[in-house]
Length: 290
Image (cartoon, rainbow, N blue to C red; front, side, top):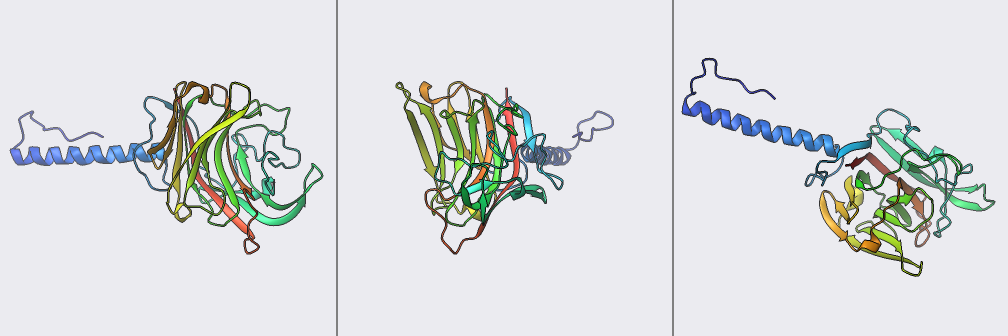
């Protein structure tokens, strides 16, 4: 932004200098706000600027338009076969592309109580939606993978009981651990966000460490959930504030990861009979890397 110069080069009167300094200060504040808005998007509480540093924006989606950009996103896990689920958890949903919709600058993952028979031969009492930067099927190539960076999304989680919304990173190898769970809500408590890292111990056994943050009325509005992942640390952020950090070498992964956002159902217990549907809304997703 260009400020007005004095025409003859003479010093302006003192009161003009005060106005000039005030105007410059206002311009600086406006510019800082614009930079933060560009970096973080519009959804949810702003909070402090994310720990981007000198990293550059390498991946983003603001979910403009009326349909999902399938160049960026798949609508299932890498083992997609006319839908999918995560059999590693006691989940009740079968993911289908029809449960993912884009409207008004956000993507919505919709869970609904509807019985469907999966391609694995099992019947699932719920259908739901997910998006991933991974593959369309087991033999395809992932759309995008990331090793290190700062990952952030603006998300509004559902308030209904029995839902298991998540924003996380899974190895491109499709075998976990390692795993980085940026944001998870499970059980009947949508007031506390869960953050976890998962790794293999010296004997190959899976281990994990985690932290929760709250209470906050997360379903009331969008919130920013972020993860800083470097070669030496992993740190979790909620609305720009660091809430959890690990630095132990065995806990920090060093493998390419896919980005996933999903609305699972039934962990750790099924929804009550009074719940027939739920929605997880995502305003934007960003990834910065060196």
